[in-house]
Image (cartoon, rainbow, N blue to C red; front, top):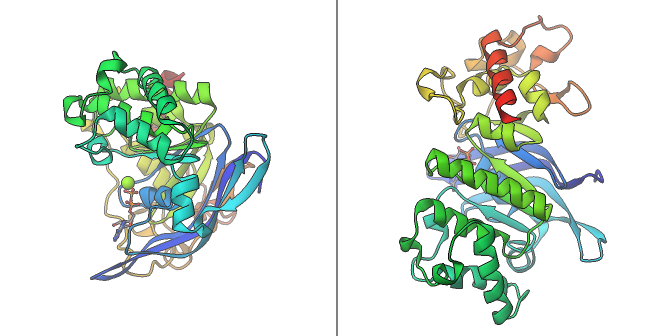
Length: 356
Ligand code: ADP
Ligand code: MG
């Protein structure tokens, strides 16, 4: 494992058994996550972002089948000694008791679905700590108040006694983040954590996550549809399409020099916080049906720059630089030279400028 990485996913393959047949949802994913940094994962709906991060957190749905791959996690103990473990090979019980929550925490889009309607929020935050036997009940109560304060909830002493329905959507999402942070995880995964919230609350939650990251040094994996968010929070970006990572690099690589035509289309179609989305481009066509085998580049039928080979052979991840990789035959030395659309170049430059 590379010493700067906290997590390395290699060759991840996952399928789902459905009445219609086997859906090959994840078809060989490779990901590096650097310790203390933020990785953004982007891609159209259905591209496999959630399944990828859920497999890391050990919560794949019952009809899911792990067909192969590793998810190496460089776990550090209190003395800083490192031990590499493969999260995909851990028994379910060990994952639940020793990893999930304490080392890796995940925040989903819908806070209501993550909270128990019949328990006060105070009890729910404290429970996550006592479940892992990290704190006594008294300590857990004290830390609950601290955490509520930390995520910006006023009057924590009163709020601990509230039930989820007594809080606004933005406050509930803050509670979910407090639960995620309760055991001081190494890795915080946020799967579209602000999609259901209005724009000002979104911005505040985002600030909160970045601030907590600075304070606690955690590593963040952030899934979002918002291009402004990517520019603001990400150090690195991975682009997913049809169950694969088709391009990855630093945020500068992806915003100043994207190489894959799918990345061009995606970045042109992703809204950003300050933009009206009515005038946004949409990529023509639809992603492939993963019930059927994919031949060639999965994006070929929608790719205005597709060549003959795109329909026959899956492209490898070509190396653009030490940090930047893209899986498009356009990077083959025999391919014609094609530039990203000027319009997109201007848009990305503007968003990067605003993000600073
Ligand atoms: P994303 O998060 O990028 O929108 P997902 O990771 O949720 O996409 O889904 C990837 C693919 O896996 C989709 O085609 C989706 O339909 C399929 N999928 C996810 N979970 C299941 C499941 N439990 N059963 C069947 N198919 C699933
Ligand atoms: Mg998802």
